[in-house]
Image (cartoon, rainbow, N blue to C red; front, side):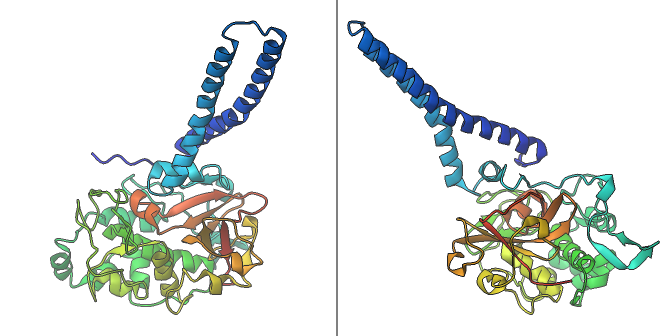
Length: 387
């Protein structure tokens, strides 16, 4: 049985409570130690003949030191593990920009979100695409109702071993995709040249929806993660394209510049992705990028940094660094490790679409960040399109 650790709201809240408690211990223990040692030394000066005073002081000091170093060791261990385990990833990120990597249930007042269909108006109020349909629970990611129903119905259609024969029986992979309906029929075989956040969201559902139906693995040339499994693990969920311990590593990375060719296996069968590859797949398909360059943060962000999370808009590309960066000084922009983009904006939060190992491991491409004042200088959002 493959049990996944999901950093949902309950677990994240619990870890935040534990983390804050341990941090409090690291503050309180030194204060107690200073007070206790001061009192003990005063007593030793006043009563120099007191037996075993020094030994007792030493033992109690060691006990306090152990209590102090346990949370310190745990924090250092989690930092060293980084994103190698889902527990350490959740531990390190919880509390950062009020981080919660699972989709938050939308509230009635703004459940329809930000993504607007400019062609549909009722009494001057734009009709908006909704994400409040729960589905039957087999799909972890939150899509719009139409797309979610399609994905739910097809996640177990095929895998690597019967892919070619299955598609041949359906008149080819292209015909199969067009037969799915919804955004899959609408966007297969053409680039969108999007002109609104609503269209970018639909293209995102096309790309992520098909990667979900297929069950992509993660591969960046060295790190490998199984669909519904873990990084470095040997098992995957039942709906994975590469079932069980099967991995695709023999002929390099997949095609980020032609998603339709990739998904149909036109050039090769390589159903893998990674964080910047996923951004490129969507943005090239959407007509925002001519070719993939999501990792090119220096050229992309210069003069286009959005400093405040409250100003983020759909389409902004978010880069992640291992240290703080000065938004006004490109020479500090280094030690980059991750990228995602803003897919939805609400009054109190943003939702990023993340195609890294979080997506493949948890089968969910959406991460939620509550809006807050100020900035997080280990992330840098860049505006690549103005609506």
